[in-house]
Length: 250
Image 1: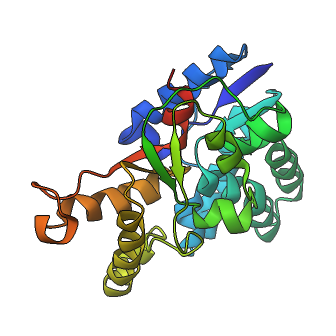
Image 2 (image 1 turned 45 degrees about the vertical axis):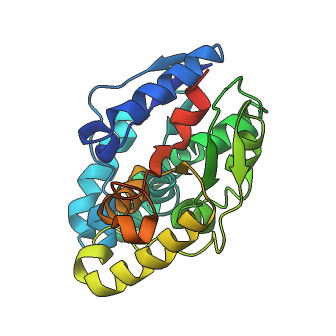
Image 3 (image 1 turned 60 degrees about the vertical axis):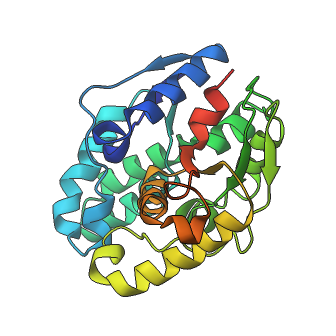
């Protein structure tokens, strides 16, 4: 299958290893991966903060850039959730009916990585080997908008050498929520504290998720934990690692 990678802004600018891992994984599974270089922000941050008129051009650009590909895969439930559930509505509200139809059709061919692997390719064992103790945080958009359910966990359970431990209160938000973490910093910090307490209770070496944004938020919190609270000499040694990186490991 010829697959287009939508790498997302955050992965492109801050976590390029996630994009590389996604490509390595898909190519290892026998698929051709292409990277449309015209891609840019999908407009999610504009839509979620009320700048829907400004987002129309980004929706149109997304559709134009990825038209013609059999499948579009992104290592982000958040961005895929926006493309699938917001883009067509934004175009309709702007009176762009034809664009809304094109956006809806594109949304049907755009997949978060775990749902592409499980639902489209019919795989759970992707040949990965990752000898670490891992706990998994299901991000809000993947859990509630895309309803990926246990697909990431099914993939992780098939990884050789992994010690996968359940995360208490896994369905609770980590507190990031894009600009929510900036506009409601105290609430965000309290939610993050609860999440990290649960992560640390598992004794995991790695906390994984399907969105770099949530991992960035949790990683920032983990890096600031004191040795007193974490029991580690230089703070906690729990590492945030994207699902794609685990599945690409051999």
